Length: 74
Picture 1 (cartoon, one colour):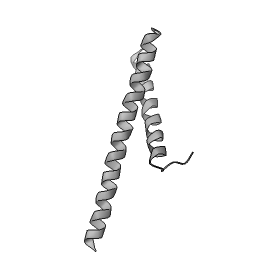
Picture 2 (cartoon, one colour):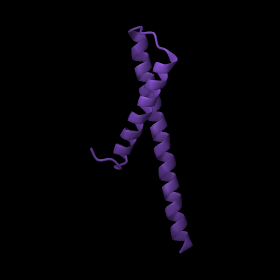
Picture 3 (cartoon, one colour):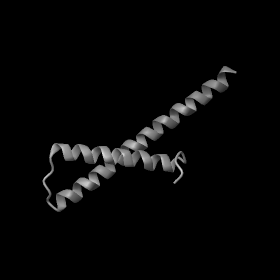
Picture 4 (cartoon, one colour):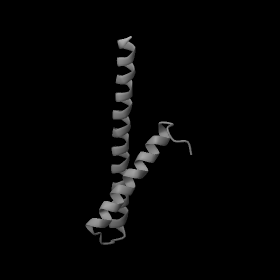
């Protein structure tokens, strides 16, 4: 009985770790692409704008990962 429960808990932990890695990596890719585009058109960025871009890319990465994991149906 405990083995089944431990297996289910370990599977949930693995899914959470995999999802968090996907969210972070997707956010980094989005932030990097947006930053390069902004540098290409030579727009000066303040620290506040960079934090906004990072937070938006994190939210987009979380939504995209949720969609890929079929947690979110759009």
